[in-house]
Length: 527
Image 1 (spheres, one colour):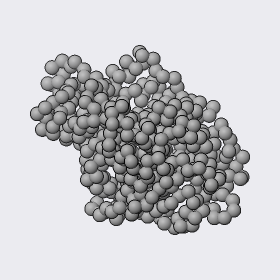
Image 2 (cartoon, one colour):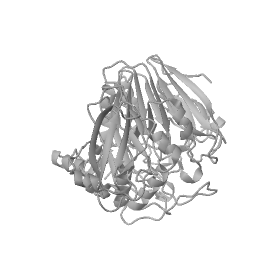
Image 3 (cartoon, rainbow, N blue to C red):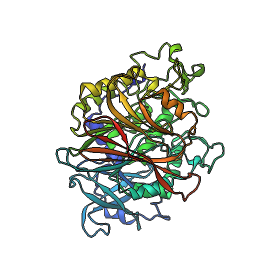
Image 4 (cartoon, rainbow, N blue to C red):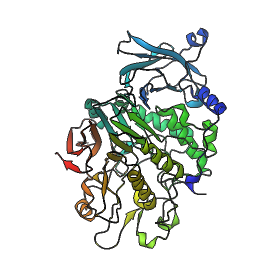
């Protein structure tokens, strides 16, 4: 059965109630004073910090996870305030951090004022968490004049330090879009700057430990506390190059891949500020192959609609991988009989249909799609013939064509695609048909480099730009993140890069800066 046919129907009301009770998301449970007062924790339980995410105009998810909490459920109090000293508390409650969810907490306070900043914190026993700062978005029908957000991806522990986040905190952001590869499942790397603990990541405990390792990094932790995050995943949150229900190619094979995937998905939920509704059939459903619904859309007033896609969970296997094994590679499509199969999908049929409907209802200002990877065609072979990477959109040309046609059918205003995955910066125009260079330009894309993960360097990038003229810029040398600033008139993207990810203290600069005027899908370089 194709991967995109494995999606599950929405959960029943009873299933949702059971899930909400377990995940404690959005619930302020009426705990007996005895349960609260008897909680005593030997160590600081808030060593992983706090985070917020999944913002809407009247709600946001508040997250933390207690460490060293033992086998029992722990009562946790949360507070939300207008000020960082908590003199004007606007929301508070108690919830349970259960061992079934690694003592993670997901609180969904509702009824908040739109377009407003808040401060939040947690308490467990006599311990108090760091203070986090978060915000709601403007109401969907409210005018908004400015949105400033960063997009980032690919933070491999072995390849360097997360120093880029120290600089990101100074960017005065409304939100962060994280586009995949928050962790890597590997035990080591050649010429490693530092090594993760625990070896290969295979089990639920392994995934929990790897997330805890990352969450303990001070710069990353501080960035999570600075503003809300919207998150999606790629492959390394499970296994390199996995595709839907099909395993990838890293490490020794496991007996039951769906069990490994379920463990990875559960750990992802436990460590991200996601709403409980993403677990459509609860934790038990994950091991049966049920979906974890993370794709969604978020309006930012009338200025923009943000979309987050999932190109891993529902995709068909990569075409014509070497030796018929799972995984990615460079392929000559002329020698691959299934390459242009119109049934093959990267997003899955249901997500494709959802996206087109969402675009019909999208912003009249900007429509910004956050997804995992490079969208435009990237031919690695100069001259005649093609050599294309089969793990990204190039490997699913019919699916890419359906998306470009959906952008045109829906007349989506000012479409912008943001991506990651390739560990390089690429900037280009979205074409109606990449096989025809003279076809209409219908939008723009900015694919960002990694936080730390190594790329191939700048070798042959000039040659590849000449072969793929819909791209206007590429750089494979520097690491960092992108910053997008949106106004009704213009979208500006700054590619921010650090000098050296192998150093904890490193300088940052703007590698390049581009602008797109509303109503005109053309990229202008500013710097």
